[in-house]
Length: 267
Ligand SMILES: [Zn+2]
Image (cartoon, rainbow, N blue to C red; front, top):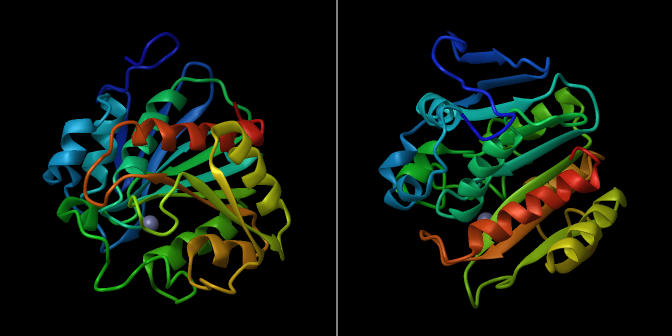
């Protein structure tokens, strides 16, 4: 039970059908989850920092069980717009956003929303489990434009689902690049990326880092590849050393996620 208005996702009312779980809420809105990429699965609770900080709920237990089979995605809503996708764990050792995404899943569970929210809390559960940055030696935020990679599969899914905006949530080391709480965007070819980032920046005190054109510096970044596909996208960063969870970093990441949902009028 997740507070007032929450629902109890007991095994009695959630069904496992292959890789698809579904439960129908009393209010008529739907929570579903499924594996969207295979070959990425792992037990994220093997990462002690993740295990210690998981916001407990039966829904999150189901997400973590599903992550053993591949990249899980939890959907709130029936596909109606606005459609927002929230992604965490492109870099497996950037932990705050992955915990923030689980917190968001608990928050959205049973809540009345306008539109649809797709939450991908762990892009590569096996990397998260090992607390490692790369997938098969690859930086997944450089190969979103390469067919067959997990981030490219997410890009294709965004197109298929007609996502209206993508938020990709990361963390940055103190003294790293950018080394500060921030939100990246570009003004072309998708100016709405800049509008979205401006809003998140103001709401959360995140530095606004705006590029003139998507893809000039990081063509394979998920944000850039998404903006180049004319789907508005931003990358949000909070400060935390890799492989750990700095104090306050989960809340900072979570607030960036909420700001994105508020900007689209979902909450
Ligand atoms: Zn990152």
